[in-house]
Amino acid sequence: MSRELGPVDHGRLLEALEIEARVLGEVAHTASAEAPVPTAPGWTVRELVRHVGSVYGVTLGWLREGRKPAQWQRGPRQDETVADHYAVARDAVIAELAAHDPADHAATWWPADPTYGFWRRRTLHETLVHRVDAERAAGTAHPAVPADLATDGVDEVLTLYFGHRLAVMGLAGTRLGTVGVQTGGHSWIARAGPDRMEAWRCSPEEAEAADELVSGEPANVYLWLWGRAAPTAVISTGGHDLAAQLWALLRLATR
Image 1 (cartoon, rainbow, N blue to C red):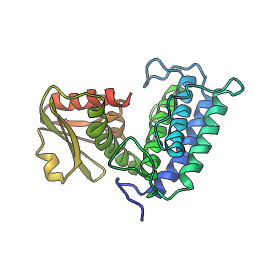
Image 2 (image 1 turned 45 degrees about the vertical axis):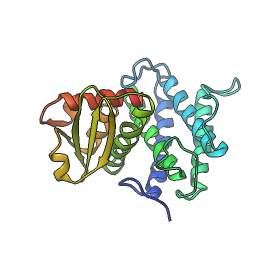
Image 3 (image 1 turned 30 degrees about the vertical axis):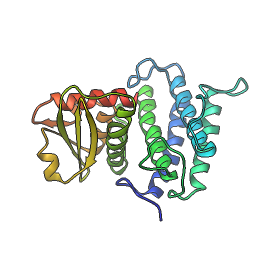
Image 4 (image 1 turned 90 degrees about the horizontal axis):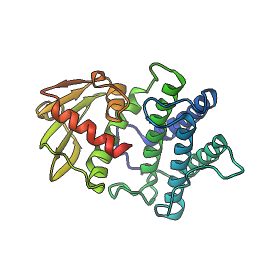
């Protein structure tokens, strides 16, 4: 029986990954390779595609070798184009994930979930966020993000990156306090401070009792937490300092 850690089941995650990875490749093909990516300063579309292809390669290393690869494959081989490198890695990682039950054991960088399901979710959201980046580079004004995937992504970025990744990186908040997050019928609390960084799902009442509350449409909250939307994309009540700290810390964890 597969373990479902988020609002979306693993079958939907894999299906969405296949769609998002295909669309990202199509958008990158139609955009100029040298077009700047406004939501990822310093990157061009070419660098964006190279990055995602490399992430797929690293994911395959975790799955096939049972550990983090010794080094990233930063780019295509001499006989490969960036687009070919991306396509080969994309097809390989999707095939590997599809060939295993999400509950099957797999090495991961999150002790709470050592399964193939972790990588279905992580690979989807890596792809989805960068598909949005590619569409922004191509001139799409408001890239669409399905509400169910956005809600799942909010859960992932809070529990995985805020609640785990920041501590691994040795990063912490300077102000102690809690931020409630509400969207898509789900609620969370993120608590930061000099000696603690944690996030968990909670009741609506608990979220509303936090020091500050961030809410909005799922796509807006998701993209805001990933640094892809302006502060005005979400509604912040009870103040702004702790919400700003949450956003800034996540920018460090997810870059």
